[in-house]
Structure formats: C-alpha cells, structure tokens
Length: 261
Ligand SMILES: NC(=O)C1=CN([C@@H]2O[C@H](COP(=O)(O)OP(=O)(O)OC[C@H]3O[C@@H](n4cnc5c(N)ncnc54)[C@H](OP(=O)(O)O)[C@@H]3O)[C@@H](O)[C@H]2O)C=CC1
Ligand SMILES: O=C(O)C1=N[C@H](C(=O)O)C[C@H](O)C1
Image 1 (tube, helix red, strand yellow):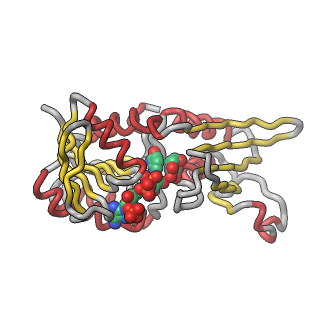
Image 2: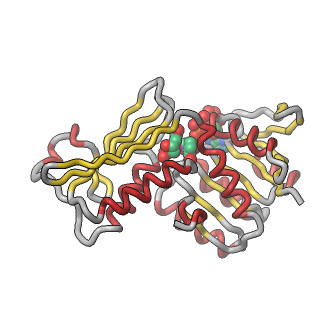
C-alpha cells in the first residue's frame, strides 16, 4: 500500500518540490498540504487536487498521513512536531536552524507518543558524502574553516549543514582545532562552531554550496559540494519517507544514518 504523506511549508521552494516528487512516486500518496500562507484552497499537483490549509491539526486529522514532511521555519518546528505527534504521524524534518533544546524535545516526543522523527540538515547525497569526507580529513588536519554560500532568501545563518559538519569534524578529533591567538577580535574571521570558523555568503544566483578547507604545512585540502537545483534533495527525501514509514519510537539525525555510513 502507498505511504500517505503530508507536507508542511508546502508553498515554499522545498515544499513545492517535495509535493511534486511525492505525487510522482508510485509508492507514495500526497494526501495533505499545509502552509502559513494558505487560505484554505485547493491546489493542483500533477493533475490532482490537494487541499491546502494553514491549520495543520485539521490537515492531519482529516488526511491521516503516515509521514509529515516539514520544510518550513525553525520557529514553527516545535508546534508542528507536537501537532503531528498527537495524531501519530511520523516526521521527516528538513528545516534548519532548529536548536539543540528543540532537537531534545523532538527526541522526547518519539518516546511519549511512540512516533519516529528524522531530522536531516541536508538531503543531497553529495552533501552527505562531503560531510563524511570532512569527518575523515578532520582527523589528520589541525586547521580547518568552512565557507557556506546560499541564495539571498535563506533566513538562517550559518546553514544547518555547516553547523552539523563542524560538529562532526570536531567529534572526529582527539583535540580541538588550532586557532590564531586574538582572532575573536576580528569579526571577519567568521563565527566559530565547535572550534571551526564558519563564513556565510548570501547572494542571488546561488542555491546551496559548501567548502570545507583544511590546512597543514605546505598544503591545503578542499572538499566542496554544490547544489545547483533543489531536485538534488529529492532522492534523499524519498529515501527518508520510505525508511521512516512504519518505524516507532526512533529519533534519527542525519541522512548518513539511513545510508549506512
Ligand atoms: N534539509 C535539507 O536538505 C534542506 C533544508 N532546507 C531548509 O528548509 C527550510 C525551508 O526552505 P525553503 O523551502 O527554501 O524556504 P521557503 O521560505 O521558500 O519556504 C518555507 C515555507 O514555510 C512557510 N512557513 C513559515 N512558517 C510556517 C508555519 N508556522 N507553518 C507553516 N508554514 C510556514 C513559509 O511561509 P512564509 O513565506 O509566509 O513565511 C514558506 O511558504 C529552511 O529551513 C531551509 O534551510 C532547504 C533546502 C534543503
Ligand atoms: O536553505 C537552503 O537552501 C538550504 N538549507 C540547508 C542548510 O541550511 O544546510 C541545506 C542546503 O544547504 C540548502
């Protein structure tokens, strides 16, 4: 039987792409769509009429999805998750900027309501590989910096991918990354996350890009990933939907966990 899927943030750049992808997938059925901007109208997705509402609770109660996919706003995630948990929908969350306290609450919801939640800062396979390679390189280089570049409409900074990359690079090491004494006085040195300076660029013309630059005596190593279209995220989103359907009481952070890295 096809997996029933609803989308939160349905009118956004990612939400629209996810609705198209889900409705094109023979194993999935798009049953509901929710967005803060909706005013209770039907929208056409691949020839099918889907009811779009700003009332997530009524959307979920009426459509009973197995999975709610969320690409919306970090500030909205706690309420979205509580609402989904109360109707027993599992969550696949791609929204970034979600703080560790909220992640803790999401994990608690999996136990309280016996639902499963997956949060992934990046669903593009290449980005997941970039993070894995950065984890490996972090063991051998004492110096590292991250430059992440995105479209000018991105609200959060730095990107969720950059924060997760820095955290995992730091966790892969036995000692902190090296730094320059007094560098905190210079804003242009970026903001440090887990000891790694992160620099955020926002420009029209960009989609999503990240460079992780490692340095050592007489050499640098650059690991770079470029997203040129939001289609890049869709295979990862589909994998997450299929993997998370039917799971109970699990909390998973990162697509790498589903790829067996
Ligand atoms: N994990 C991944 O692989 C990826 C993650 N992202 C993340 O996904 C999120 C969305 O990105 P993107 O689609 O580009 O952003 P958009 O701003 O295009 O879309 C977000 C949508 O969510 C709506 N929204 C805002 N608040 C709420 C709410 N309380 N309830 C319901 N809907 C709401 C917005 O409405 P309004 O415009 O009126 O605020 C908008 O329609 C971001 O956090 C981004 O970083 C993006 C790409 C890939
Ligand atoms: O907002 C975006 O566009 C993206 N956000 C995610 C992030 O913050 O890491 C993933 C990707 O970089 C695109």
